[in-house]
Image (cartoon, rainbow, N blue to C red; front, side):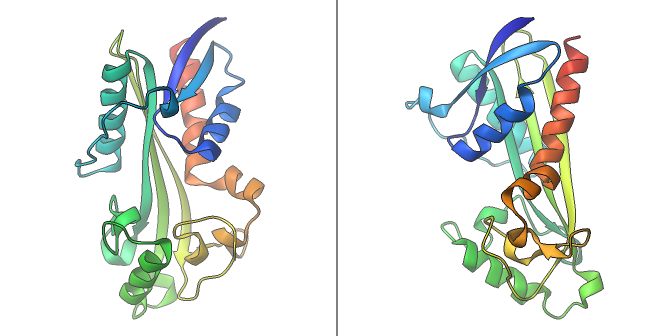
Length: 204
């Protein structure tokens, strides 16, 4: 089995650990996974595309070009159906450029509060892009997790919109689930499973 270095375009240690776990049992290639801490001088990537896919690919391509390494990047967020897909790619800064999770939640609740519960359907989206600068190969996958937006936050686990994202199959918000369970059903876990399958298929 060949070994290749994979740069994960993130400094989030929890995210890095999850990615390592999912990609540790590939049948076709072994990845030595590193993160952006190895390249402190890299300029920020401006996320100016109009889709999760566009932003994920831009981050992966720019980091791959800047380091010469195969690179994995992602873009994720919350899509609310009754709001026409908002907050979408602006999820992290919905209430302003430096908004806190609580501020984003308050704004979202204010916007959906007049809709009946059955119309407040939503899903988390995660798009992952893997780019090889040497061959030009690109793998893009999308994961999702379905839920309903609640008007009262519940739960202390998780982050972002987790306290108001109700998961019907468990009858709990994402923030009420254990971290282990969340990592099995989340949009990121779904994307990682698809990425693992795509890599096994590509390099078999």
